[in-house]
Image (tube, rainbow, N blue to C red; front, side, top):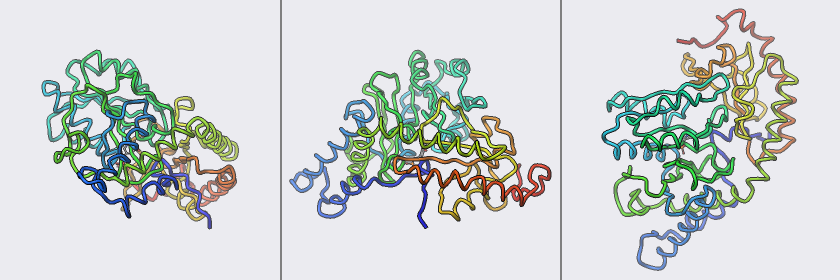
Length: 395
Ligand SMILES: *Cc1c(COP(=O)(O)O)cnc(C)c1O
């Protein structure tokens, strides 16, 4: 059975070109880029090229890139640095719909470090209210951390505008850009954004590699303290294969961005229309306009997401649900709950996230299967009328 992979917001296939670029650094070219001899030193050149390619993708200078172990480390580095370098400010402004990398760090900082966190809400389309944002950021704010695009719904936030408000009040602006980088063209140079986190494995390179954009002139304190790597901004011997692979992935993304974005969006729109046309009681979660081109989050009433995923999985289709049903307790998606998506729909929500490797045939197969799956599940369970048929309980 051929697999149809529609879970690219969770992780993505390593581009064959990125793998080819990495291989020499896992075999013959194992030198340490900090070494004085040619064998090691020549590797430093490849790291520099990767840095240039990534900087080009973001529209920034190579000196503003710090390689890290991934999106999570980049988020922690940015937020903790902003707090450490703004000791007189004790407030953090963030949203209720962040990825756990930011959400749980902010909860931790509130609980154990005495920071005040202002949690911004979203409306039913998943959009922020700019008046609320404006009211939350003050001269007590150390850092504003707002994701650029949401991993579950694909909804895009106006972070450039928010960064200007933050700058006016002397607060630093961090954005979790993991989902937007490589999907939408960015030009960070002319924005007031101080930090942006990105992750290799969401961008067709390897897991365990990522980067942090650090705007020139931004006060900074390292997270990993050790050797002089990354211009004294991140200690530890470089993940050379990862860095080179990320550089290649960035180069590919930049080259194909305009064309692939349009193609992927057309496939996503075809999937969306195909499902809405053939399945009753289905609705898209998240703004239709302000959305990543590859993401479709769709809620099906009277049916459980987990059951849909299992049926899809039997057909070799990989997607994900907005809830994780573990050991008898259901945790509905915090993102969909923050949007006020009705209970019955949260539990039947599925995220399809596409990439440039998907084809029209794959999408058509999914469109053909969805009504069959949903109808068979609805026939089996009198969901909605009898809530005791829900396998999991909700607190
Ligand atoms: C995947 C993801 C992360 C975490 O990145 P890792 O490289 O897996 O640590 C952070 N933020 C968002 C929005 C993500 O989708």
